[in-house]
Image 1 (cartoon, helix red, strand yellow):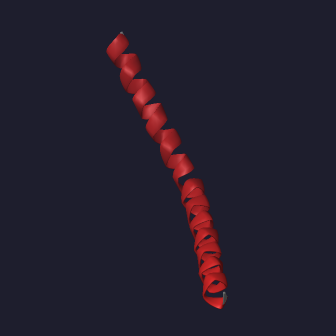
Image 2: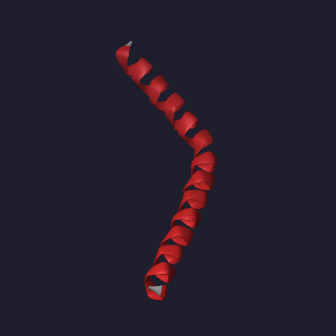
Length: 49
């Protein structure tokens, strides 16, 4: 039983760290994705004309 509990706690800790990591990465990449979206929009606008 203690081994199972230890495994569950390790999985919970790993999940917590991964959520924090992806949350931070998502916040950092938002400005980049907005810039990329604007560039793509401008490129397709020029191609459509």
